[in-house]
Image (tube, rainbow, N blue to C red):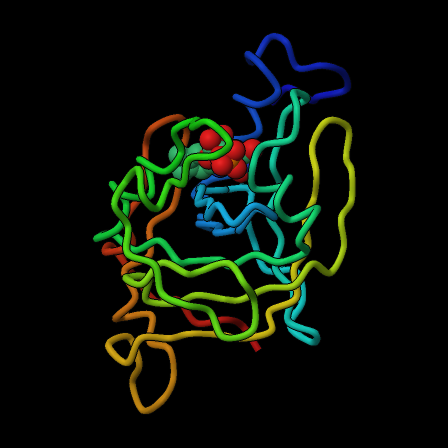
Length: 196
Ligand SMILES: Cc1cc2nc3c(=O)[nH]c(=O)nc-3n(C[C@H](O)[C@H](O)[C@H](O)COP(=O)(O)O)c2cc1C
């Protein structure tokens, strides 16, 4: 076991070390709308739930170059939608990670159907089984990255993934990101009881 008390150069880049160890990561497929009305869509696997009361989720654009389009749009409009990535959508999700010119929408580039949101302006992915409409809760700068917290103000859940009105993990085939271009599906499942 090697401890880490400095830049972990011997393990490759910090990005490589952290993003390979913290796996599998859920993927937030984030839709935003620019002030000019361009609908943006991009995957973020530095993504998770932060709180349930209020319901808050987070994602983190990383890097020290200029802000990516997603955080730029969130900064100005304070709204976004998190679309859940299931196995049937993973190729489309991956295609939306391409770097496009600012004025071009990934929805159109990849030919992804939009559905209108109820509370916020950005559209959601029509085929997403679950989508959370979010309003910016807090924007926290961490070095060259940003931690974006969003309060869920509306949730869309497809009837197909419900059992007796509740979201059913047996029906929701979510995908996780591993390192680089590797992903994990969640079909190999098992149960383990928690201690009292
Ligand atoms: C599965 C997946 C997960 C990703 N997760 C992140 C992430 O957590 N943070 C990040 O900055 N970029 C992440 N990326 C890269 C962005 O999606 C990519 O830079 C994209 O072009 C950003 O688009 P935007 O400028 O429209 O926001 C990820 C890419 C993929 C394919």
